[in-house]
Amino acid sequence: MYLIMSESQISVQLPVLDLSQPIQPSFLSSLSQACQEWGFFHIINHGVSKDFFSKVCLLSKHVFRFPPDSKLKLGPSSSLKTYTPHFIASPFFESLRVSGPDFFSSARSSADVLFDQQSSEFR
Image (cartoon, rainbow, N blue to C red; front, top):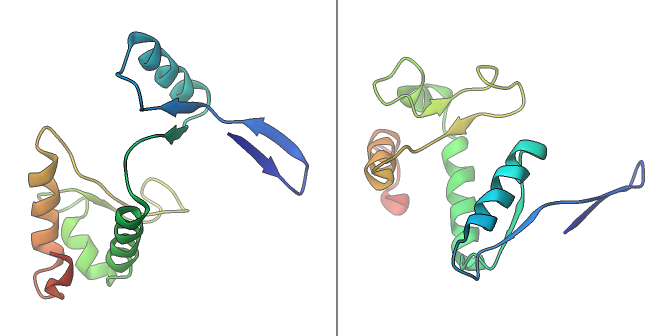
């Protein structure tokens, strides 16, 4: 995949990782190299539908529009510690994460706190 930046006319080729084949050691090497050299990569043939992706984006926008007090219930001072506000890790973004090994339980715990009094549409 090429990324072209119009202002400076720089063209770069992003690392592309194809998930259509079983994962081999060479794939893991490519993944490691992409993370070390670029910090990100483009995944193709991942099986995530555009409809599902759109729903996740909508949910993400909904969650990050919550008032700061609601999000801080998951913040660094909470028992869950899944929310990171602006300027803690970066001045450009805030984040909400899930952690393993049980990602579903981690996400559910955060959702239970965030959606306590919110619409059940996203539960």
